[in-house]
Image 1 (tube, rainbow, N blue to C red):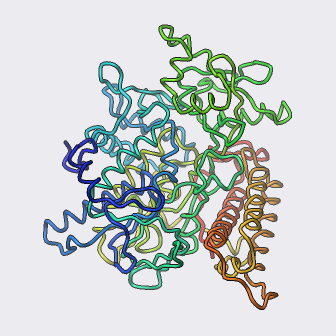
Image 2: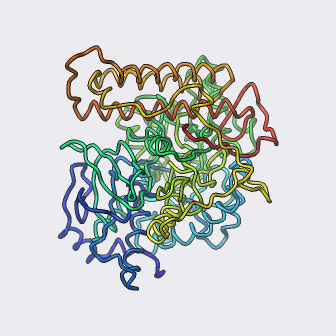
Length: 606
């Protein structure tokens, strides 16, 4: 086994040790220790998806290594992991994890596919790190016993997804890859005495002290935690939209925390809409792997349309498929298109289709069955839904941000890997690779270390001196200084704040969605500025002489609403600034790519 690999998750000793030494937290994530708010942590990780867990495990190992060489950390030093496994984006991921671990594949081929999908905005150096180290990290998971799917002979099952030139997608539990990987690697966390966990709600990062502070809400009130280094791994931002495959906690909290701390963000105009979410109820994701097995997209006339749009048909990059699905829906008054899985039977003639679907896609099959749908006999209605944010907190190749001592990894980060359009199943890999890198860097970076970002222009010979970094507050002509959420909570209710959240989602879907125009984006900015102003007025409301003490639920809703409004404004402003169509950003008033705009835009709050 690789010397850098974590202990085997299938080890009976590790599992039994974990059971003996663990304490359940209120969110159900059992950990080796619970957090001590009086402690001074060398590293605190905010978020417990694959990126956060990878960072925490790597940081814990780096502390162990420092102890073994006498570099003065002491085995009492712990890594704090804040967050819930079940609430992470990773836990809900279906499609799989891409890696060049098979003999007919290579990191170079994986790099090529990623660069093509990224529509000219991927950083080639970052992508090479992803594919080369991704192969190593995934092999470590395989050796550690993560339960990837295998055939009757014990060989790893390989899947094909859109824009990949090789079958390189590994799945676990059929269409429950994220849940299985999270469950397996969480055993490593529980068995690691270096890692403690809190399920606190993070409200603010304070870098005005030598050791940064993390301000949190807990059932017992506000608490402050000190950490020498902070790693953001908070996941995505799908809750900015009414139709999303993301869990409730994916509301751009990490990007908002970083902006308020003064960090640069980039590529916020690029949001990937998954082409095929179920159009009923809670937009259950119908994995791209279903199309990889041979399913067809059809309109309500029963006509297959993707072969006329792209030579890769249903396996074209997601932005192409999502836009065509949206156009087809507009041609039929907004009604959904359909995914027909019956052609899959041609590829598996030795097994009844219903049996194959139940085995290959157990989660989807069970969900559809619960809702009275037999997809083996009839097409299912689907719609595009907000799925993955390519933009985020700008980082270097080790997760460092423009704010010293702050790191970011996973979906909340912008590493340069995803470009203008993420290649399918690269997101789990990015979290794994860059979480590992950031965890080590957070422990080993000397005091005074500053980030070393790659240029925003991916062209050869480009320099960071030419980076285009803009001021959001000045661009919008408004103050984006912090809003007093305690005051909002004293003058509002959870229901009222949720209504404001609905307004944010509605304007984002209508105006900053799959297809955009200057008019729609200006409308979004005006709507969002109005909502932001209403939040500030609410905070400054002194009409009540005896404001109430806000309940924790109201405060959480207040922080969430302010974060959503801030990032939505930034996203709409970035989308208006990019006057071209590229990757997941589609402007119908600028339908073509502009070579002069083949570079990323970065922003600071004020």
